[in-house]
Amino acid sequence: MRIRQVKLAAFLSTAVLVAGCGGGGSDGGSDAKVSPSESPSVSGPADTSASSPAPTSEAPADPLGAAQLKSAALSGTEVDGFQITDFPAKPAGGGTARPAACQPLENMRTASPDPAPKHFLGLLAYATAGSSAGSATTIGLMAYDRPGAEGILDGLRTALEKCTAYEGGVPARTTAKAGTAPDAGDDAVAFDLHTQDDSSDALVVVRSGATVVLFYTVSGTGSSAEVPGELVSAQIKKLEQA
Image (cartoon, rainbow, N blue to C red; front, side, top):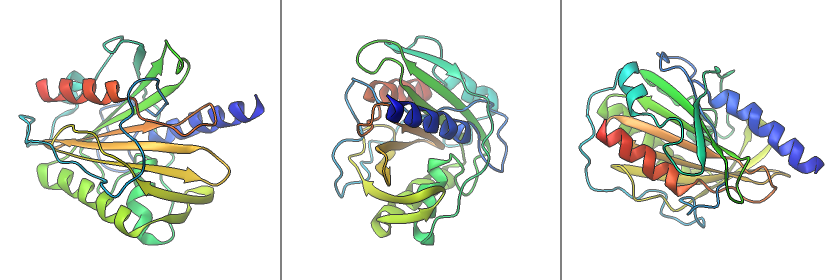
């Protein structure tokens, strides 16, 4: 029980970090974090295919404004088994990864990518049913121009090719491992971050047009986290229809 409580406390602390973006316009407001779900996982076993580009979507190639991000964001009970709310807290800023090749991974862990998005909106999706009830998933919608959005995914992919572990950000060594990316949006990257003496966290980053969407899942049970596939599918579908 004590381990579960410590893990959940750490999750909530990280959720605050993911709530907004350091630097840049973040008038989108809220932010979200991650959580395991009984639903299909998009994190999957680690492998060398960190990304799986999908056919080009109809998503806008220009940056979305704050109001457009809000319209494109999930809300309420749009996804069965989840209660989705805005998460307006602001982050305290990201840590410095050592070696520097790992910095894009640490930046995404704290929802502070470089460069910062033009607008940011965060959500927190609580699992209300099934074996994952009580867990949460952070979703961060980030508005870029098309080249900027593509650069974020490319940077993560390059980092995963060079980075296997790093110090910094959290007070323990963190290992990084590429995962199986979902078939979503125009491009996607998946990876796990495993901090020493803790369970693995799962991250999925999807680009749809000029918008980058972060899904970050933390386990409160001590088991490895998995990003809920239904949240990824629902959020990217709504974004592309906005």
